[in-house]
Image 1 (tube, rainbow, N blue to C red):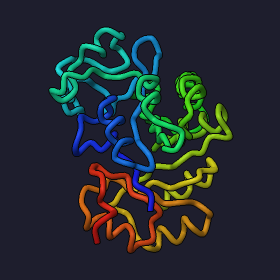
Image 2: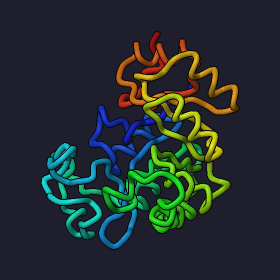
Image 3: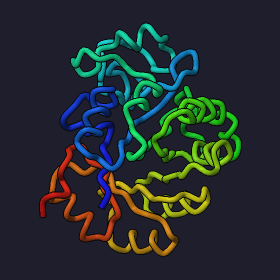
Image 4: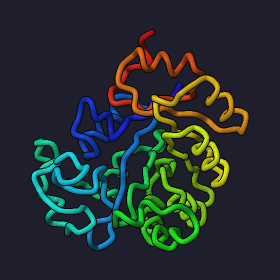
Length: 245
């Protein structure tokens, strides 16, 4: 099975930081997963929540405030991620830490607004495409193999148009919707939540020729359950979970 470091093994390092990604690579992870969205000038940065503070559904990951996509380079560099003293990194800085033998899984989180990220295919693609083009432009110069992942049809469709040779993965909370999304956008893999994992889902995905990587795995028992269901990999908060049974 493959071990993919969720936000750079967020259980042992400040999530989505250069330190987390570097540590995940050093620990021997097969892949590293990060979240991307744009800062105010459109540069892709690595951050999960919409906001830097704890307003709305955001968790207060930094001591700064406001939406990520409204923040400039200085604000993000100075934002203190989870008290670590590290700022919000650019995708370029994070990608530099990932060598050619480790997959970089890039979750397309938002194109720069709350409304646009909720769009499905069709009309949402023009909103997503400029951001996906910026992301792909950054990653084109790096050695690491890339996988684009998203919950959003517009993001996957834009990725399919911008970088048809780069593998895609469909994230899902609903098995049927996930399988449909994976098929529609010719995804290499399905990434279901642990809550919806079943041997039947894995069998259906494998029948379509798609791998199954499960998120978010936090202990060895969950990793064992993924193995028993026939999954191909885990997206985990901690390293080494596959070493136990």
